[in-house]
Amino acid sequence: MIYNKSTLKGNIKMFTVFGLWLSSFTISLQAQIGNFAYYQNNIHKAEKHLLAGKQLEALTAYYEILLQADGNFIKDIHNGLLLATELGRIDTFFVLLDLVVGKGLKNEYLVEHQPFSMHQTDPRWQLFLDKNEKALALDNRLRDTLYQLEQNDQYFRLKPGSYSVHGDTIAFIDSINMDIVLDLVANDRFPGEALGGVTDMYGTQPLDIVLHHYTQSTSLDPTKPKITSILVDLVHQGKLMPNKCALWLALQNDGLLLGGNHIFQFSVDGQISEPYVSSYTYLQQTIIAQNRKWLHMEPLVDYYNVVKYVIDHPSQPYIFDVQRQVVEATASEVENWAKKMNQLVPEGASRE
Image (cartoon, rainbow, N blue to C red; front, side):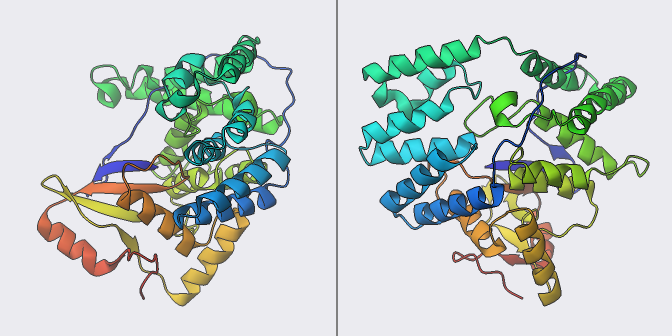
């Protein structure tokens, strides 16, 4: 789960760390996941089984869609691997593990990933590492460039004074970064996980921070064009997780109702409250349902259930494409906010 920690004044303290390097490419990229609507529908079914404690049904659903799909997300492979481990399906684990090859995860990361430690005495584990190392050794200028974009995004932001001292330089770098991103999109070279790689099992990618900062800036600078259609197209191609995209769409503040971007917990003197969600009219709920279906997202009630599950089970090891915000507030501020919002009840139903 990704979550923002912010104050009521709107200062976002986000995870970030990234950079810039110009290059030319000859790679032509296609959709990362073919028939993405079908893929997402089956992943939602697997996750519902998982939340219901039906591990075997969940594993079966993950296994079937991951093996038959033309492409995938690392978080879904990860959940299937955990289920196979928990159920003692070791052969299934190693079948699914082969799907990790080529995702860009380093062997050191995989060896240190605790849920996989029990498999490291199996001869097939070393065979997997050897195969993964060969995939990592392939020359890939595209990935090198993406990581440079990530690094330069953060270089001046992390220097003393940050925006107050280096604001113009940061803005200049951001504009060049986005020129490169838009060039990739225009030439059908925007990379999904398969060619862009990931840095962890959550599916974090180098371009995430570039898109985050750009979409955030469009709500502050009306002269910057919003990139809604671009982001939606990338979701339809299976190159962006829908709820990751939804966060960026919300940062643009362009009025697109999706419903899952306003899930708040309040931190009062270090104590975190239950989650609260926005209240929607019947018409808004109808629009939200249509928009979420358009983006291949689960129904809002199902999304609320996943968020509540993650919050109620902080030590659970599965990975879901969900977000929430933790807001630092006083008791009186929370009381005022609570009057405008609904508490997220256990079954995930939103009250009028």
